[in-house]
Image (cartoon, rainbow, N blue to C red; front, top):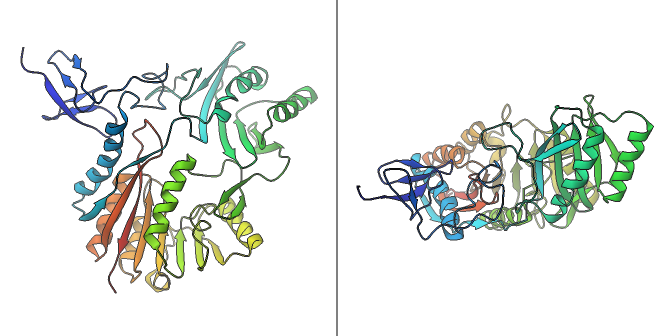
Amino acid sequence: MSEAALIERIAARGDGVTGDGRHVAGGVPGDRVRDDGIIIPGPNRADPVCRHFGKCGGCQLQHVAEPALAAFVRDRVVGGLDGQDVPYGEVLPALLSPQQSRRRAALTALRTGKQVAIGFNAAQSNQIVDMRMCPLLLPELFALIEPVRELLVMIAQPRRPVKVKLQMLDQGVELILEGVKAEGLDAAMALQDFAGANQLARFAIDQGDGLEILWQPEPPTMRFGDIRVEVPPFAFLQATAAGQAALVDAVARAIGDAGAVADLFAGVGTFALSVHAGRKVYAAEGARDAIAALTGAANRARALVATEHRDLFRRPLVPAELNRFGAVVLDPPRAGAEEQVKQLAASTTPVVAYVSCNPASFARDARILTDSGYTLDWVQPVGQFRWSTHVELAGRFSRQA
């Protein structure tokens, strides 16, 4: 038998990869794999902490020890930049969110008879892995799984998937159920009782005709810096408080003491409101409900934050607009911000703080910026989705005057 091959790295989808390019499911750097596929464990393995690992699609890397997990997150960022031949400065150590810290999740439920399965889907499948434990979710979110399961026995239609959305806000948990049927007085009263008994911050259902808010004792909020935003239902928020703090800190370091700042793809104000103190901020966002929430919060706080509802994919800021700012913050969707980045590349904006949830699109956009004279000073990898192959980062680009 030939010598077992050493697994050197983890690929983007979570497989181990040997030096000769062989992909090994479940392999970890430091393991060795024999010709017959048997893995000889190395020093970077960990015992999975969840009974559903290997079936549930929520995690791919619970078998990877913490140092190797952090190295994977960092290597994903470096690999993307190297693949685009982007010159870069310092790559900081990856910051990983802790266990039981996910504060938002979209699950699926299915009723069969009087049984309800609820959880994440299996990997690359529509099959639901019935959640009986979860080391990812905040305990307050996981505590609702069984009550929701019991509720869905009454209002879920047989063999019709129900989307279960959970999010932790300042006042408690927001719960949204999509694809249910709650008809009649008894059902309406049961839903009200459920919301009160579980002390929900907001409870809404969608029976096919749009979202209906059933319970909201006060407007649910999320705090950014010193300002509270009244957030719309299941508004996009960073998945963990630790991940948000890491990205906000990176943005604050990147822009430094810049005067006027533009926050593009601003959402409900995660960055605009976290860095507004002592400077003017312009915030642009294409989602109407998100920018309305940000505008209302800024107005109530009398913050120097000017907002605009603007589709930055169709109408990016042009150099004449960008040149007014001392720094620009970008936080686009997974596809990146190619059209806006091309305009930045033609501008004289001194600093760009780019937050990304996709190392590949970040690297593509980074190449455009560095080709135009920007320097990528540093990148901060962030493993906000613990044990997942999903990697985030923030980077600082600067241009000499």
